[in-house]
Length: 264
Image (cartoon, rainbow, N blue to C red; front, top):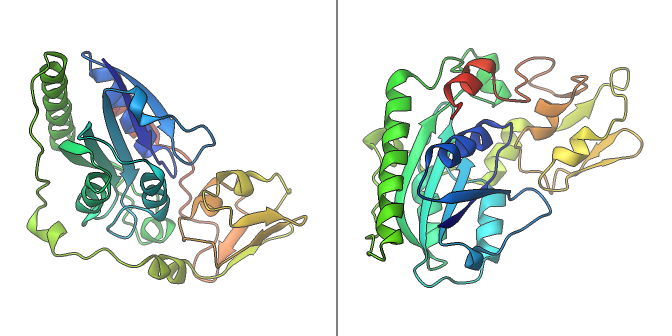
């Protein structure tokens, strides 16, 4: 059985978790597709589709919505949804569920995984959750994957897998998804330390919204920015800063303990 997982991963946590899922599932062969990349794969070529992203101000990121919006309507194709989160997941899963179902997918399973935070302001405030996920989180994650494996087995035997209704805990359900303008406002205007910047262009490459260009130093288009902090996190010289935060809280890749825990 062929499957695909469309994922959006700001600093690698979500991608790592998706590779863990793909490595654990034995009843299907999953291809991973980075929706922030240029290669797009037709979901019609796959038997089951996964959608994965990170919690962005208690909802799914704008890039996720833009990507799903471009997919042609499906005829009840089975799908699962998954998100990572640092501090709070909020309504991310429900937000994903609504977007995916609107395209005709049959959402059969969903899960949220607590991972280290990649949001610099939270890390600066000492809320980096560097030890996440805990043993209980991993156990629940493995149970989700085991359930997905069972679902896939049912599908391979041409049995119908019922659509699920995503359930959120009370604390998550009462937290509304915040508007994207709030994230951009929270980040504020970005600046570049010219003495540190080496004009490498990494900030341009990692921006999923094409909001950065070199001239010859980085120039930021705040009207296109969605405050994801990718440019800040991935700058190897830590030359990018804002009025609120500078030279601290960078998270360019999954930390070692997370990579160890999510090794299939």
